[in-house]
Amino acid sequence: FNFTRRLRSQILTSRYFKSLAPMTVQGLMDDIYRYADHAEPYTAQSVTEPSTLFCCIFRLLMHRPSIEYLRGMLQNEESPYIRAAGFLAMRYSCKPGEVWRWFEEYLFDTEKFQPRAEKGHPLATIGMWVEGLLSDDKYCGTMLPRLPSALRMEIGAKLVQVDDLREQYKRNSEHLDRFRQRG
Image 1 (cartoon, one colour):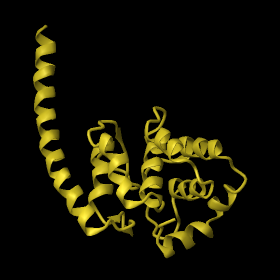
Image 2 (cartoon, helix red, strand yellow; image 1 turned 60 degrees about the vertical axis):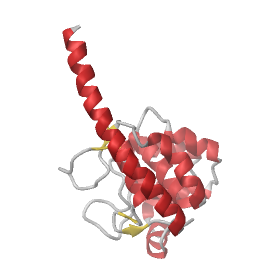
Image 3 (cartoon, helix red, strand yellow; image 1 turned 135 degrees about the horizontal axis):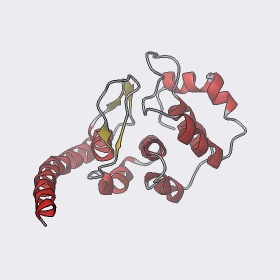
């Protein structure tokens, strides 16, 4: 998988990761549902202890889930952290050319969740968070797999349009809210 050497090493030596060894894929989803409370690579106020989510993602990728299974995670209705695990698993393991195709439809997703480990950070929408996974080379201080320059420029041009469309959606939804209140 395309995790940095440092993050991979920290995950592999983590006591929590080692406890995941006998788990099935469903068991990993259960652990994410029960214990994940952010989507950063490390636990709060640590740069060496990998988070529950990242340990589960790494173990999940060791099971070699199908792309259909990962896509199902993106549509999970029980936990935004299961969804985040699906996006991150795909970002770290899919071919760069496939990432846009799998993520594009989620750019306007309005489900809110807490991606940051430190308490007090504002909630983010899945759509805005996914946009960051597409536009940035780094994620919370760790390197993401590089996208080829041409693909990166193409995605960047599309993301400029997404910002405009998101603004338009926001204005339209305000008008709809007023219309519904009158009706």
